[in-house]
Structure formats: structure tokens, C-alpha cells
Length: 164
Image (cartoon, rainbow, N blue to C red; front, side, top):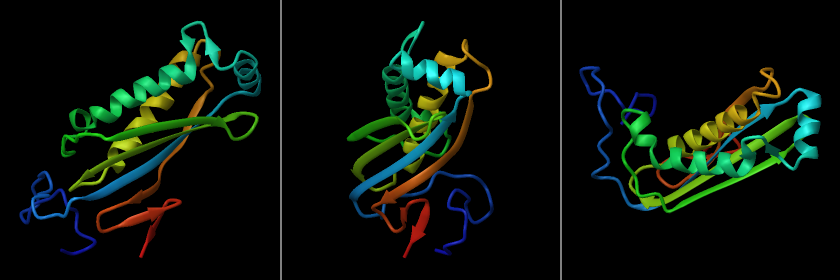
């Protein structure tokens, strides 16, 4: 297969789900990250309250929402395969005075990768944080949603770069 070809198109250029029947079953992992940038006063308030808002525990709720999204990625993105997720882990930490980093790591033993699941989990977790904090400010920005690493299958990504 041409490495530059779009895998979700058939030879006639019509959309299709990728055929994974002949792929090998391997241990597949992916980590994605989303960052939220808060106004300084909002970030200070969140840190002061232990990341709790009127709606409840912000990070805990984001992890639940992100996990639910990971398991339902195939319902949101048309050509994603339904997968039996074996691992779904989140971290959320302030990486500066105003920036929260959310990372989602997903793993399976299977024939197809889980980067879309990791990206979906990180995105929905970030959107959940936004939803729970929007009463404090609408100037919160979700940014830098990206694949951090992936392993298993033919291609490997580390720190957002394709590895040989």
C-alpha cells in the first residue's frame, strides 16, 4: 500500500472502513494530550479550590466523561472500528500557572490502533473541564490537541513525531 494514500478511500475514491482482517494482533497503545489555558484569576481560583466547582470535582468528572467518550469513539467518528478497550488512563496537571494538560492513554490488544480513541478521550475531557468552569470565564481556551505517542502496528509516534 502506498504510505501516502488515504486508507479510508477505496480505489474509486469512495469512503470506506479500513479492512483490518489481514493485520496482525499486537499490543497497541496511544497517548493524546489536550491543553486548557485559563485566565490567571480563574486558574488561581481553581488551584485554590482543589479543582472543584459548583458542579463538583472538575478533574474526576472530566475523567469519567473522557472514558465514556473513548468507549464510544466508533459512534462519533464514522470509520472507527468498535473496540474492546483494555486500558484507559488519564492524567491532569497544571504545567504552568495558567495551563492545564490532560493526557489520555488508551490500550488494546488488537488489529487496529487506538489513536482516535485517545484523541477523543483527551478532547472530551477538556471540553468537560471547559463546561464545568465556563461560569468563571468564557475566555478559557482549549488548544494543542495532539497525538503524543502511539505504538503497535506499522507506524510508531513518539512526542508527536513519526518514528522509523
